[in-house]
Amino acid sequence: MKIVPEKNWEFYSYQTDKGLVVVGFHADADKIEKASFPYCARIIIPIKQPENHGGPSREEANALWALEDSLTELLSSHAVPCQMLGRLTHEGLRELVFQLHDWETFRPPVGMWVMQHDDLNIDVSEHEGWGFFFESVWPSPTSWLLISDRRVVDSLLRSGSDPKKLHSLEFVFRGPAPALDQMRSALLGRGYTSIDLKPAEGVLVIAKSMTLDLGPIYDASLFHEEESRKFGTQYDGWGCLVIK
Image 1 (cartoon, rainbow, N blue to C red):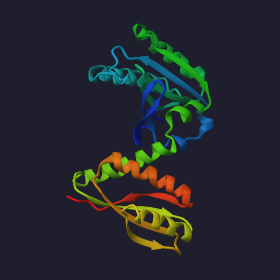
Image 2: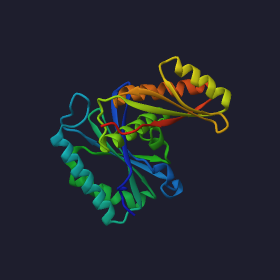
Image 3: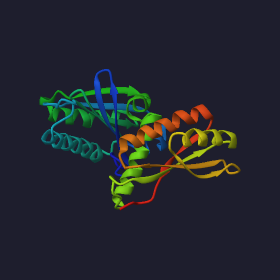
Image 4: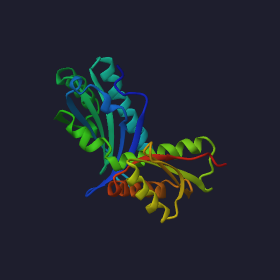
């Protein structure tokens, strides 16, 4: 078992009353057998010279990556049953978030690692269960919208789409026929173009011309979620053709 899962990491950020929190997380963490890793440990590393946003400079970021590697390699060499599933950066701190099977195997190598870096004032916070992970690391539904939009934009850019050109973004909604008809009428009044309405299948596809600017696309997705709650439909994302 790898201490840090290699694939399917995502990132996003959110604001608190104390400032920006930048989050990296393993997107399959919700599929892990929770009973196998019933404890949470946060390894909290102070950033020596945080930038205005609370994160590290590029040079210090490399040092933090090296610290993370040394810790996970040590845990792996001791065959500690744990997984690092989150990484938080905020307020001049870097937090590495682990879910683990037991404290008895986890504490000794972590204590050894902390002693090796006693000049950094590293702290360890211990928690029961998955509460911290799902409250502070796992994305909210609106953050998942942003992540999904970014995935589609990134895929289009990798395929050669010109982000400055207009694309016909095709938005998909699902639900009962009367609700879809109301959604269609509302969006047509806001400059959308109807592509396909299949009442029997419960699907509406409706398009709008936009550039591949993530900000406005995310705003559109938030609006679609709000309208879906109003009309009783479900917003199911979007796609479009590559425009070079």
